[in-house]
Image (cartoon, rainbow, N blue to C red; front, top):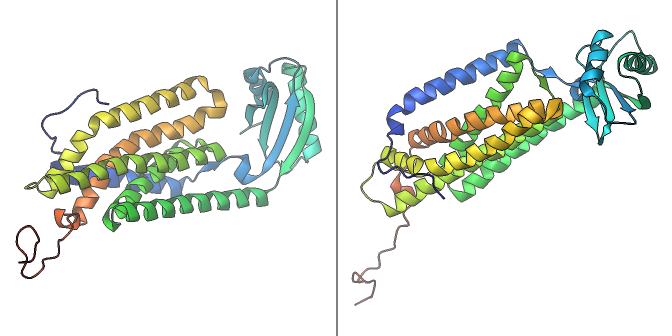
Length: 314
């Protein structure tokens, strides 16, 4: 399916160096922000207190957040849990209060501003649990990267797998850089969005690489930059349809999903925007600079001595 067809190939590779310099600068800035500011980790990673309360009617989350803010609580997370009547409140560690005292303080503030709450449970998440979650999340990210490299190496060759994984890691680091610079909360849902972006971006790279391989096999007389330009141009319509429809869905979550889905959809939005850039304008030039050529896709036929042009021995 295509919205439009571009008859003349756009010379993307003519500006490949400029695109990758922009990409490198953005990547380095993200790394600087990560090391200088660090990520604002949520309760799942740092440890804290989880409080579950229930209302007889649908809970007003904004009123609950307002009551907690007036009572002096900071860095709290309020979201529905299971139904519109059940609410989960996450609070960071406080050295001057134990779990029971913290639960009482929260219920006191809720009854003052948002009455009708019934305390269901109070749980303490220790720093060790948060450390294990962070380690498991990093391991999940590493396994996804290894899986992508192996898949692309089998489907194409090592040049394509190296180019795709560099481009995808570029997207991941930039997402983390945004969260570090603005100090947005990095939670498990954001980690899930980062993993989703990895798979989403590599899908776009595979589409372009498939067209590159197909063009090398079918069209003679084109240079490597011309083949890459043709592959990118011929898949632009498909790219616009795919990314546009996905972004519409993500945008609806960003606007109407509330605080629970806000940072998840925000991470996806950043990943989709930079994923288009990296898949087209970072991965493809890297493949070119790594030395991809037509000879790597053409199967060499074995010449039998004494055979004619049809392969028959005379």
